[in-house]
Image 1 (cartoon, one colour):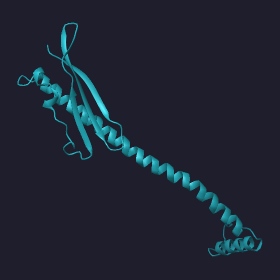
Image 2: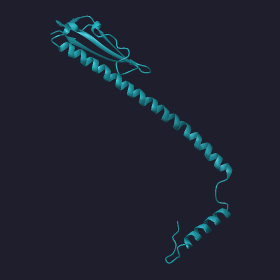
Image 3: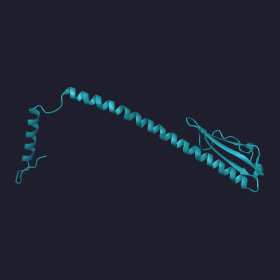
Image 4: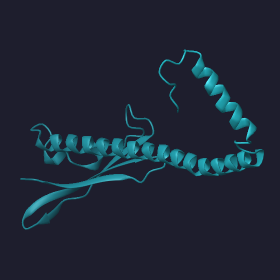
Length: 153
């Protein structure tokens, strides 16, 4: 951008700019219709993969959110089972599958299903224990499963 010389009247700058523009138009500077069409085709070809990338990213962020919710629901149920195990009113004997019926759907979380599986007693090195597995499933995602062992001592 050129600067007007000191002392140039205020309207002289606009006159200078119009003169530069008219010289550019007269010299044929600019784009032809073919060049503009080529630019539009290239731009549209570049935008298509970018739009697909954004759509895929949006779907994947929803999947991550669902997986996080499923993990939290599984952890919450496992903590409930641990509290039952430690409770004087319930204790180890309460840890059977029938004490924890399947939740379909999980309350306040439509679309999520939670189930508890508790194995029969096992013994290792004289210690009796039960394997507890909590699974949470939802549409369009693999199940989230937490497994732990509770002992009877």
